[in-house]
Image (cartoon, helix red, strand yellow):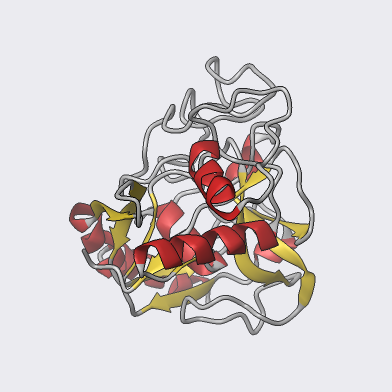
Length: 269
């Protein structure tokens, strides 16, 4: 069984997942007032082994299973920033997210919950006449891995100055968020999926991947009072930043270490 699984991983290295690396493209939709929307990265279809290939993480990162994403989509190049979220707040006359005592300019928004993120996505959809939403957990991992099968998108060690977390290197000393785009992008040109801020997904929490969707869709059953978070944050240790690492949080929670990015459907720009 282990030999079969190893052979499958080798085959996946030369799969459409890898082909997409050189084909990703950035674009922006336009808001009704003429301002540009968030920078999006077009992602091509592919398949990948979802979960902890190395069996070094939690039991809820198992079992590893193959996910087939047979559709194109786009994902935010950066996590949603305070500036982007403020445009929504001002346009809809809703309360701005509180940056605590930390920098606001060019930093990822936090102190927002799942309902806030969904409202922002609906507003952006109305502004652009496109369909924006939270990513599924599978879409998130597919985009974060960017063709990699290692523990992190860049390799099996956290290294220095690859991400923002507790223990991520000399450039990550402050106990607060880092500016957006401060650290290198992954192979598909996406920034900040590892570290800095936990990112919400559309999935309900489940304690393992048994019976999980294999088509890239969000898991809509389980503990739907809680949602799945991905990516790790400024206050987490490197093991929490692995591409397969996951965490649960109450969907209504607003904290200083949870933010989000969005997916746009039908996106092969």
